[in-house]
Length: 262
Image (cartoon, rainbow, N blue to C red; front, side, top):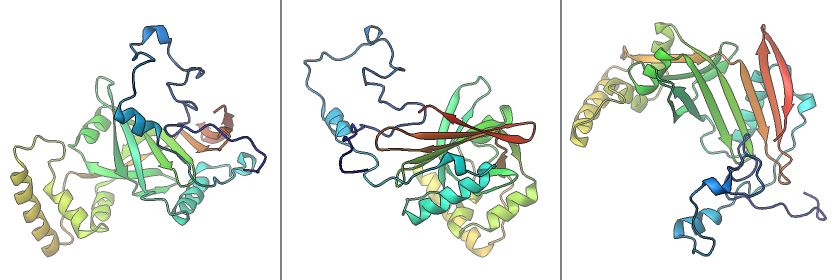
């Protein structure tokens, strides 16, 4: 940012592609009618949590430029480029992502999972078929992914239908993982009610022993899912709130690029 540029307002939380201003901002176009909300009196003192929340800063670094006109025709090469740049920038765990699903009644849920790969087939992740996410995807095979890389003020959103990869892909995925990851998969029973932590300790110890003895052991419920995107959005934050949002939408097998207002 140039020396004579006006100082941008400081956000209290990361700007999302859908919410360039905090919901508490009175001039936010998406803010609800204040008369309908039960809010503390303007004379009340902020709580320690609110003071701590307002003290947080985002993007305390120089943000990269993004020229959407030079973006490739397909979103995958741009994703790979941004991922490599996130790693180079020292972004912690750039391979983790939010996975949003919905249950049979349409109620949403979200959790953080690990990306296992991205190619022309789609974005790959894995879990147990009987887990909550597995049950959701069996009932409604559609999901959304969200990557947030604050080291560069970048977000990527991916959404589309989800398919189950063949069993041999799941076996290869499991065998390529660490001993600890294999042990965790061998424990299984993900999302089931746990009677006591001691029960988990016993099952985990047994699974670790087996994983060390049998590095090629299989976990029948382990499943690889592939999200085949029909929409991918790249969000580049800007200190003056001139955020760049580039969306790829696929229609009839062809990607169409569009810029969106931040």
